[in-house]
Amino acid sequence: MRDDEVEFLAGYDPRHYERPAVTVDLVLMTIADGAPAALLIRRDEHPDLGLWALPGGFVRIDESLDDAARRVLSEKARMDGAYMEQLYSFGAVGRDPRMRIITVAYFALLPAERFAAALRAGPGLTLARIAAPGADGPATATDADGPLALAFDHAEILSLAVRRLRGKLDYSPVGFALLPDLFTLRQLQDVHEAISGMSLNKPAFRRRMLDKGWLEPTGERETGASFRPAELYRFKPAI
Amino acid sequence: MRDDEVEFLAGYDPRHYERPAVTVDLVLMTIADGAPAALLIRRDEHPDLGLWALPGGFVRIDESLDDAARRVLSEKARMDGAYMEQLYSFGAVGRDPRMRIITVAYFALLPAERFAAALRAGPGLTLARIAAPGADGPATATDADGPLALAFDHAEILSLAVRRLRGKLDYSPVGFALLPDLFTLRQLQDVHEAISGMSLNKPAFRRRMLDKGWLEPTGERETGASFRPAELYRFKPAI
DNA sequence: TGACATATGTTCGAATCGAAAATAAGTAAA
DNA sequence: TTTACTTATTTTCGATTCGAACATATGTCA
Image (cartoon, rainbow over all chains, first blue to last red; front, side):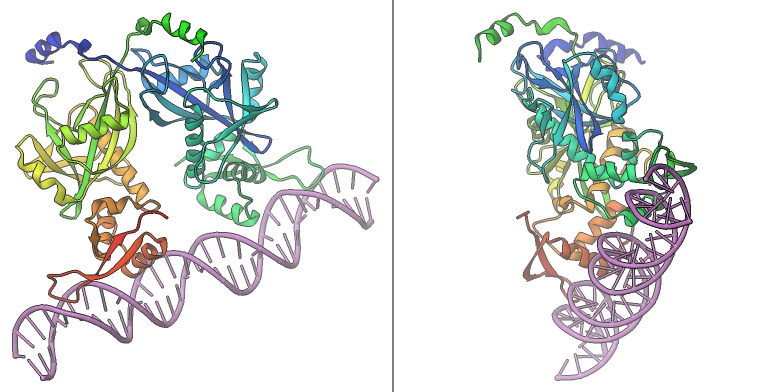
């Protein structure tokens, strides 16, 4: 560092501005029972006490945004190893009544089986089914107990996550993050149908997927079916 | 607001955390002389004094992210009326040596003619040609004076902006933001070719564009050509 | 051994797309 | 006035893609 740069830094006072707080919020999604679902936490503090919220937390001064999201996944959602991707930053002035908070939303994907342990931990966590509307309109979350009211602007964040997932499905291999290591083409198609909300043509879907070069046949077959078992495939990471 | 909520807010101390600062940075792009270009400002302060940076500024405590981006467009780039869209948030810990700064990057589009007035304002502003690499790899900026060194992580932000623009070109009408109100199909194709870096088939391009329903023929013709003048079209906003 | 259910593969017509050729409409020079 | 020239616009044609229907394969189970 040059001398005049050191001088500059010494004279710089970062407290000239009143600063917004920064958080990350996580839309942790999966496909459960043939429909998109997201993990929600019941708020046990004001504001919005009792409503359901996305897992989130403040970004610490010495961690990157990605690190903060990864930490929230571990500490708040009690899971790890998820596919993660930054979604969008939300910064409306009144989105949190306590103070000015800007949140960087992430979306994360895991196969449904991975949620079981975390959900057993307590009634403060739920895996809510997401009713995804057509092009836009807010997504709505429902539980075994019925519709869930979401805290803050989390319904808006959730809606964007569903749209993003839909949009990326065709040209990126995100779908595989929702399946176990080995899976059948039918399972993959079920995931695509659940996310897109449309039923797909089976041979065409098979052709498209195989042509993309994302799949690697294992030669193994699924077990436990009372009919012809399907071949198991593995996701082939990019070359 | 309920009584217990008021009580909660009174007892809340937001100064428990050391907070990152939040800025917005603007990738203001256009097509100039058949190539993508972006507006850069020469830094006249440390750090990175003399290098070229994206126009940016701190997010004020009472303005949304979008408002902050709009203000930066007006105050730093001295322009208005641009198409704007949030790009991505960058939050690596050491991206600014002064202090922890998280920046929300926006990308903005305007026709090339709109830059003339701002560029006349002084030598601190330049419209740099962006050499766009293939799939990834950092974008490089060049001036009439040669290659430009970019401050902070702005080369990375610029690269992402170019990729985003490329990606959206086919399924969203962003291309029109780079053209005047009335334009010919050839001008539109030039914009697409400059951004995608590929030369396109003329009749096919015409068909695809007309089929999308984004275009409205005006019946007018361009003037000043020494050959058959092309019809002028207008962008038809969504229904 | 045969019924059954689903996986897997094949075929065919419609739609899409790129390349090339044909036609149209201006300016400018002869 | 006519002709050459340049680019816009339309048409045509073959290759490719894609969805739907159909045909075949391969397991389990009665």
